[in-house]
Image (cartoon, rainbow, N blue to C red; front, side, top):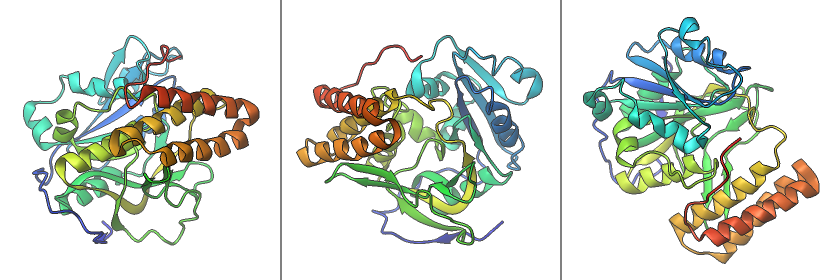
Amino acid sequence: MDAIIHHDHGSRGIVNHGIPRGAPVLSVILNWNGAKTLSETVSQLVAQNDINHKVLVIDNGSTDGSVDCLPQEFPEAELVRLPDNLGFARGNNAVLDWQGWSEADWQNGWLFFSNNDVYYPPDTIQKLRAVGELHPDAVAIAPWIAYAEPSDRLWFGGGIVLSSIGFIGHKLLRHNYIGEEDGSVEATDYTTACSMLLPARYFRELRGFDQGFPHYCEDVDLSLRLKKTYHGNCYVLHRTLAFHRVSSSVTGSTFKYRKRTAAQIRLFTLHFGKNYFADLGVLGYNLASAIRGKGWQGMVATWQGWRDGLRGGGNAIEWEKPK
């Protein structure tokens, strides 16, 4: 295994998460109509060289038959079928009701959350687990995540939250990382649930993802709650261990701009209080992105999301049933 280099960015006191070496890992893949990508994601997680590792697929009411052959194709993977599309947070939180783990597993194990359109080398879990075992203050760990196409560009190199100006973003976005994978570890403002390892006990004690978020910012919110509650750090490993087909399930939708904008307003209100500069920053950054992506339709959707977030005042944002 490559050496892991620790960059100390000033942790606020070491808090031992208490997970022993070799503890169990449960990979949770939330699926919704992932017929084009799910099988490859499951196959690569099932094939991980970490011996104490299980894979659980939670199907969010798919209608494309993407999990119909899963029990025959991957009998070693567990499957939970939800009757409807419950959204990102509620879907992932179904793991809290899963009966396949013992109390000892929940107390001493790791959860690894993955999208259904991410591909992994066989040592992903092993390397992320090693980071967690070397850093007793780790509350969440993510690797560098590259685009599946082109695979020489990063999608996630760490998370940035600037509460004073209302900015949330990925560090090193679209950066060519080739030749820079040094295996070092640094603290990050948040980790993405696209590929994220965290202590199972912490996730259960915090009751999982906040279901008041509309598909965006659930992972940022969870990261901030983890750091505040357990006085620890989120870490990113400078090694590309995941390759993501970005937004494969929402391509072409303008509704995502509305949901993302509303979610960011709610996140800043919940964690940092009311800040008009942050509210305006959220509007400005999202308008720029939406206009580039969808023109006037994206602009309208962003404005609607900004209004939704301000009206919510930090409360749960209610949406129609996910389609």
